[in-house]
Image (cartoon, rainbow, N blue to C red):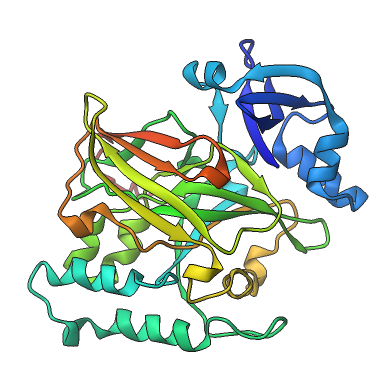
Length: 330
């Protein structure tokens, strides 16, 4: 089942089931979060509750998307209560991509061994027996709910950025129950979007490079993630023509960690088990246009598509001015 959030022409929020380009409205719940909270409270499955609550009202997805009324598949009314985080070096081949990116500025593999060490640790210990903890992955904080962009919205990078590059990934979407239990609603396709040139300068700048917008959705895939996921990442020029594209794969079959292990090493911190909070957690990628020396310009469009997740995610790159941050003494 695919769920989408959107606005009506009168700007009222709705959540609906997407099938064959038709959105069937779920009655009684204005948002995915409302629906999820009800599912937790009644101990009903999210798909079951959505299906039994679906009414007769329908919308055409393309019409809603063209009008710019598609919302991210999960959000929180208070953006500060939505964590956006992620893990890296989780996909087979991703360490080679990372090293290749760094080597292009004159480094060599001996001086860049931390990435390879982390990758090998995941290969050797990232898929533990169920119910046990494996090796912890690379982890990063990306921002709160204010950085999340729906399909059709711009991905804005600050004017001090050195680069704005896509990262086609799958994200897990979670709500924390009243008892502090994390509940996974499902998964969404995403563009984790980072500043790879800043990261190239020094790997300790990774934290800075991640503090950017991200694209998510348009749909939430309810249930378990397929073991093998295929997709395509594209860069479209200002005229809408493809100037770069590459296939990507995800799912545990193509990863050095299980989803469960990545989730454990995020939610093992009490900080991330606050009742009512929303979490969007990116699982990593092995495909980056920057590794092919692609520089994306403002006005060009990122497209991330995977059949398992319904319609493609499309976001145009934009740049916004940032004033000098000056602190005042009280």
